Length: 89
Figure 1 (tube, rainbow, N blue to C red):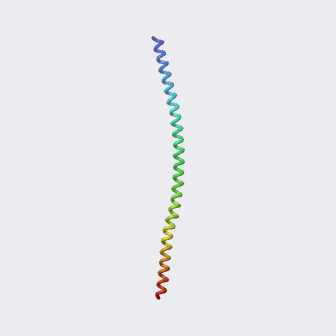
Figure 2: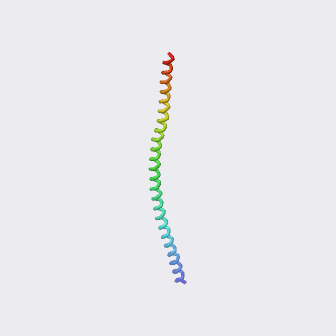
Figure 3: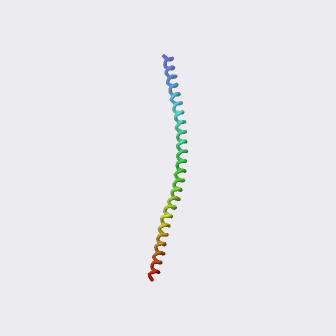
């Protein structure tokens, strides 16, 4: 009877050790995955910052051209109106 109890305890202990090893492997996998996700996140943040900077430059170029074009158009219109007024005199 005592031998059966000892064998049962050894069996339980073996299962506990096996479960602990599985938990250790899973923990190691999760740490590795977490590290990779952090690296991916850092790379995506860097890409986002770079793209935001490029977008800001593009917006300045586009809106600068639009505003500059409007200003040039207004100046041209004013100059043309001035010429037309001088011809009428």
